[in-house]
Image (cartoon, rainbow, N blue to C red; front, side, top):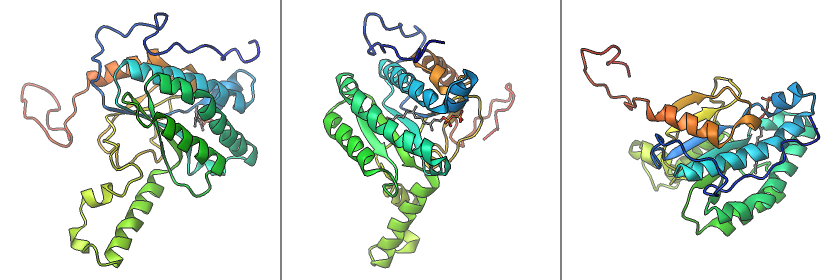
Length: 270
Ligand code: FPP
């Protein structure tokens, strides 16, 4: 493999050279897609490369996937870029991932802006590098008025951390006498999440064949359909996203309800 063979032009969502959407894909049918971008390290190591090359290749996969989401009319696309647990990686990899996030955000924000994408950040400030947060805020500012797909960069995000922070905020309101404990409902807690307006996840995709949800959006994805894609993240892109959206289209979602259809098997499954 020649050096950095993954570096390539990513066609804009509706560019003449961009692949055409599958005819059977219903544009706008999926509101919120969440992706666990897994397998960068394994992809690189399998090619005799350093793990960091896998992350670099992941930038192209991310842009191609965003272009695919825009073309398919996905309203919200949440991507797990760095978890609250990723600080356990070696200091070298953590440093790389922070510098890399900062660089990708700076390099790609204008392109995302041209695609009418609105960038948002979800996560905990805590240990997140100030310079990364500054890039996230700049991308948010630049794209704030965009009306297309919302790209939620989950960086220093952890589902348990989010629920802990939300619980703390509710407890503080109770302590101040603004709220009685018996009046705490699901809505009270949902209002304290990092992005309270973010709708529930419809489809949660994890790449690299691993079958876990790894603390990603546990509240929002409580009723998400799951797809475990076989590709490592650098091999993922718009074609794979469209394939997974088509799989979603054929799912039967019941949200805990059930329909009695005696002629069919499994009609009482929750
Ligand atoms: C998981 O692969 C991937 C990551 C930890 C980072 C992925 C982030 C991006 C592709 C884009 C980030 C961009 C911005 C702007 C924040 P892994 O290291 O877990 O791979 P492995 O499971 O094979 O070890």
